[in-house]
Image 1 (tube, helix red, strand yellow):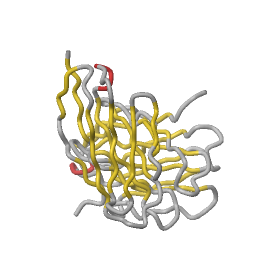
Image 2 (cartoon, rainbow over the protein chains, first blue to last red; image 1 turned 90 degrees about the horizontal axis):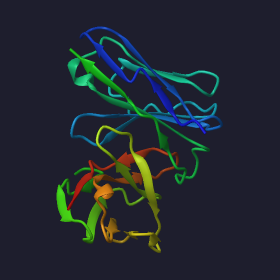
Image 3 (cartoon, helix red, strand yellow; image 1 turned 180 degrees about the vertical axis):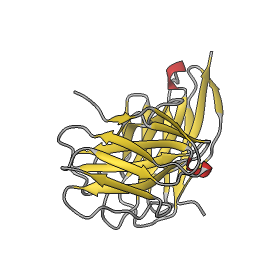
Length: 116
Length: 111
């Protein structure tokens, strides 16, 4: 079946512009996660959606970052007034139930964001 | 101290060699442990979960030592296709499903 998809695959923007990154999780997966990976760094948790519960936003680095998940499916990560340090690969993952900590997370191919 | 620490490598080994990676984690409340594999410019993919009793999947063996907060991955008879970065991943504990990733250990298997 179809895996997690993300768009765009690459995004180049100018400092100060807003960007929107999209994630389509695997159908039927109730949990959705956003991470980012900077060059030479590990994956950094950003935000986690589980069903209709309030999202865990504890990883968002600043109030310029926000995310929505509409209809329990597609998610959009928005970065306002982008800065050069926002340049990274933004990875989305989904899992079936998101409970108990043992769910396998399946990752999308990521969006490579470059802020000039 | 980082929550999950790994030796970044690279580990350069000949084909057929046995190689072991180690990882330590700082949160004693962590409940779940995984090894993910990430190929260059690709997304991470689950390699295997790590259980307290240790588990084996073909040429790969993972072990967990909760007392020492230490996880290991052993690869036997390494293949060229094993070349990748291996990420040690820990569920943060306290409920939820937030994963904490190590920065990864790079493996290069050579002829």
